[in-house]
Every structure is written in C-alpha cells, then in structure tokens.
Image 1 (cartoon, helix red, strand yellow):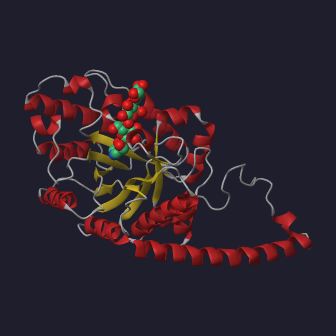
Image 2 (cartoon, helix red, strand yellow; image 1 turned 120 degrees about the vertical axis):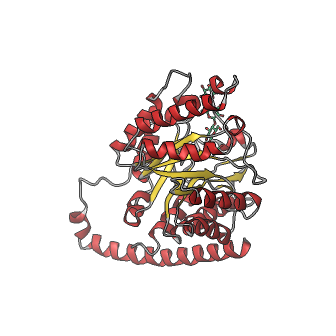
Image 3 (cartoon, helix red, strand yellow; image 1 turned 60 degrees about the horizontal axis):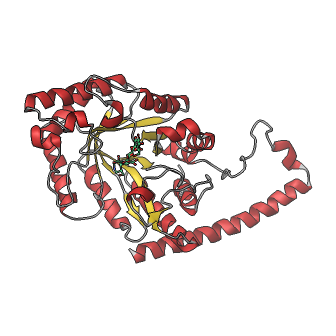
Amino acid sequence: MSENRDRLIERAGIGLLAIGGLLVLVAVVFGVLIAIGVGDESADPQQPGPAAGEPGGPTLRALAGPRRLLVGAAVPVEALKGDASYARTLAREYNALTPENAMKWDTIHPERNRYDFAPADSIVRFARAHDMAVRGHTLVWYRQVPSWVTDRSWTRPELEQVLHDHIRRVVGHYRGKIAQWDVVNEAFDSEGKLRDSIWMRVIGPEYIDLAFRWAHEADPDAKLFYNDYDLEFPGAKARAVMAFVRDLQRRGVPIDGVGIQAHELTVRPPSRKELQSALRGYAGLGLDVGITELDVGIYLPTSAAKLDEQAAVYSDVLDACLAVSRCGSFVTWGFTDKYSWIPSELPGFGDALPFDANYAPKPAFTALRRGLARGHP
Ligand code: G3I
C-alpha cells in the first residue's frame, strides 16, 4: 500500500503545487480584473456565494453528473427530519442516496400484517424533490429482522410466502422510484461460507435466487444488486462471492450488479490494485459494480496527518471506481461525522466521513472533488 499512497500523496503534492501555482495566477488575474472594475459586473446577484461553512466551488454532484456517476450518501431519517444544515448539504452535494435503516425489515415491516412506509417515504420524497436517485437497502439480510420473524418456527413454504409477500409489497410500493436495490446483503461470512440466518436455516440457499426473481417481477426496471463487505480484499470470502455470483448468472437469476460496501480503516486500507481488481472482476462478468457504503474510520484521536491518510484512501477508492466504466455508483455511508455508525460499533474509531460534525469539508471531501474534477469530461 505505502507505494501507492506515497504516489498518491506525491500526486496530491504535485496537484497542490499545481493548484497553488494556479491560485497565484488566478489571484493576479482577479486582482487586475477588480482593479479595472470588471469583476463587479460579472457577479450574478442571483447566484449568492457559498453560505458560511459551505465549501464553494463545484459540488460533487455537478462533477459527477457529466460522468453519469451516482455520487451518494446513506441517510438516517432522523437527520433529514430535524437538521436543516444536513438536508441542505445532502441536496447540494449528492445526486443519490440510500436510506440507512428505513427500508430494513425491522422498520418497514415491524409486524406480520403491518408495514410502515412513512420513514422511507419521507426519504424517497426528499430524493425526488432534489432530483436524486435512490438505492434501496435491503430486501433480505440476517440483521435487523423483526422478532415476529425470528421468534417462531416456520415451515419452508410458510417462510417463502412471508419473504415473497415482503419483497412484492416493498418493491411494488417503490416501483419506478428505486434505481438500484440491494436485494441480498452480506449472505457470506468471512470464511466464504453462506452465512447462518433464518432464511438459510428454513429456506436454504435458494432464498437468494428467489429474492432476485421476486424483486425482478415486482419492478423489472430496477437494477438488482448483491451487496457485501470485504470483497475488495483477496481471500476466501471474495473468491466465494465471485463464484456464487457466476453461479447465479449461470442459473439465469436476474442479478444486474454487485455492491462493494468498502467500510475501510486508515490503519489497513485496501490497495488501489486490490480495489481495481475487485471492481474489474465483477465488471468482467458483464455486471454493474458499485461502491455502496464507503467510510474510512480513523483511529482516534484525529490528526492532520490522519486526515490526509483518510483523504488518500477516499481518493484511491474513487479513482478505482472511475477507472472501471461499469462502476456507476459511489456511495458513502453517511457524509457528516455527526451521523455515523462507526463510533457506536467500532469503539476507538471515528471521524470516518468527508464532512466533519459541523458540515465543514475535510481533506477527504477535497480529495473526492479533485478526483471527480480530474480529467473532467
Ligand atoms: O430504531 C431503534 C430505536 O427505536 C432505539 O431507540 C435505538 C436505541 O437502541 O435503536 C434504534 O435502532 C438502531 C438502528 O440502527 C436505527 O438507528 C439499532 O440499535 C442499531 O443497531 C442500527 O444500526 C445500524 C446497523 O446497520 C444495524 O445493523 C446502523 O445505523 C447502520 O449504519 C448499519 O448499516 C449497515 C448496513 O446496513 C449494511 N452494511 C454494514 C453497515 C454498518 O453496520
């Protein structure tokens, strides 16, 4: 990794130098323009400058749009409801979002005969009001399964019916509003074995085939993804998932893509090579591929050096995605350190996202913007 990161920092250094030189030039030109009074006329009063704390300059979505890249973030419903700075930053910078928890079983289907679409509906409404694509997350997972499912025994046909009803109802409810669905999430453990879950115990591995087929029936236009973590690190799990996805294709299961979550840590980031070969591997199967849950946890306390390391990892992951034409989505698992799962689930780590808790852009944000601007089409 160090060789890549050094090259990245060196490139960042050159980039900085270049930018530094450019800035001096711009400042001189600007100075001259102001001196001769041109600046004033060209300022469009309709286009107010960046609000306090806002980064100014091109937004991530403005740079991602012409690349036809979905640049998005996971959204907790409570942040969208109660935090104006959150909503403004989200709509300004991102052209896509993923409901962080609102579409999971425990929230959307809390009782056998009761669905609660309100939290997810509010997120989807926000997305549509701001011309943002939605990644649906997730139709089948071993976590956040409500007790009405887990705390009783089922026959196979009974649980298949439960799963079929859920997928038909949820996908049907959002038909035409979801660009990509994480149909099945994290079905493999780190040894590369199909993970134990109520779906696996009662239905067997076919629950995966069935879930994709039912999701496709309910919304033939939504792109259907298998989503998992650690696929960017070579090993038993990455091999098993690759083989399994090939099998799904051989069985004619309607899978369109694979989501690489990319939950990273500055202390052990993937190499650019590892990232690209993982992305290229699935693209090589004729599938779309996406970065679906990127964050880069820092071993606290944070320092300027660690923030630069973090920015280098964000840049690596973005560049790897941009280098693979079928990598069409680049989603971070949140965007501000104010709302992140990391501190509660990974004690000692934190500050994992591109904006700090006050919505100030971090070096990681600048790295993403520089990455999207580089070689801008
Ligand atoms: O909704 C309850 C609330 O009623 C209760 O008061 C509160 C206090 O316990 O808990 C709330 O539920 C929490 C839920 O997030 C909603 O905030 C759960 O305890 C908490 O465990 C859950 O954490 C989520 C986690 O998935 C659960 O597995 C994280 O927010 C979410 O970021 C995380 O996301 C996963 C992806 O879906 C899949 N990949 C890994 C990623 C990180 O674990």
